[in-house]
Image (cartoon, rainbow, N blue to C red; front, top):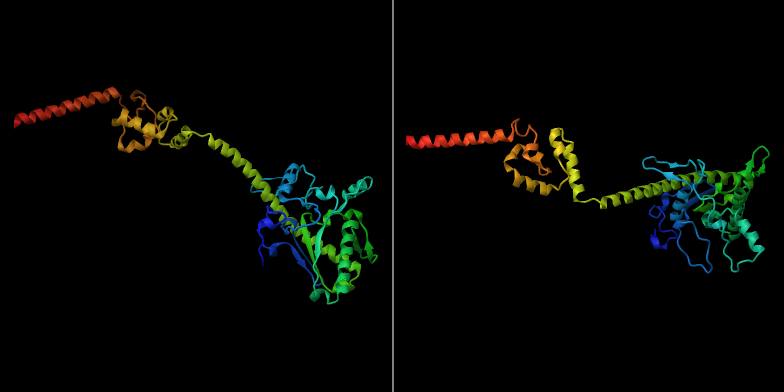
Amino acid sequence: MKVYKAEQLVDPGHPAASIRKALFPNVRRDDLGIKMMPTGLLLREKRQFPAIPILSWRERVEMAKEGGLTARHLQNNINLRGTIFKPGEQLYPKYDYNNVLLPTQKITPCSPVLDVLLKKTWRRVPMAFHISTSKARMGSFRHQRKHIEKRLRAAINLIVTRGAYFDREADKIGINMEDSGRKWVMQGWTYMFLPSTKIHQMPYTELIDLLRTLLAHINSQAMTMEKKWLYDSLVAEELGSRLNRTGERTKSLSSSAVSDVHLTGLLQDDSMHPDLVEKVGLVNLQKSRAQKRDSAPELITSDRKEEQHGLSNVSTEALPSRILAGKTPAVWKQELISSLSLLVGQKHNSSHEK
């Protein structure tokens, strides 16, 4: 199967651009089959006159946010509270380009004809569909294939615009205007119908009943996929905004903030004495190590080197009693002098004995 580049598509930014076509909604019966795919994945074509543009997925997400739709990570659902959408409905804007733009025409009509046409556009129910003809499915006669196509179009038109259904009690076609409209047509999707020769002789009552069943089934599949894409897009928007706010805070961090991270680890250590914790400051680790080596190297023993990391200049009088073994620096100094005197005396006596 030929693979097309994203630039060749109508909407290159659609989330389904990388999905295989076989995964899109499809339903099949013996008499009729229907396939669907997003309209944004159709190929661009050169037209003599500009066509009505489609609503891109980027515009869909923006209009969904303006309409109040929200989604949060790990909720796996879209919040519909405070919005115009109801559970089970397609999450598509009520109005798009099809409601404000006229179909492709060579000449733009003038008032009052223009006003009449614009009013009609507000009631328009656009449906992008294609009927795939085949001699193997629809017969070798061209007039037979054309007749099948006309019958299929007429039945779809009655369902969408008049809410036609099969009244089994009266055994005829019933009309329900409240059951018509866009509920039968997924906006932003393109339908492909695959009829067979059985449609040629099928009564309209059976054809309309079959079409209603297939359309309801395939629309539910498309709605599930579209809600998943919209949920992922809204969550990505929310996480992106969070990352942007976090990035701005991260850029403002300095070297003192880096040392604060190490300081947090020291403060969580239960072995640190409360008196020592009060003396710890937010200073650079490298500077503190150098200051400790120069100022008081005799106080740093091998079993306490890890506790001295990240300390600022702390005077010996302010050190806790646990580090000095319960003695004051004056006592330590007196004991050191006594020990040195004793060593000198022992050396002097040994020299006399010799």
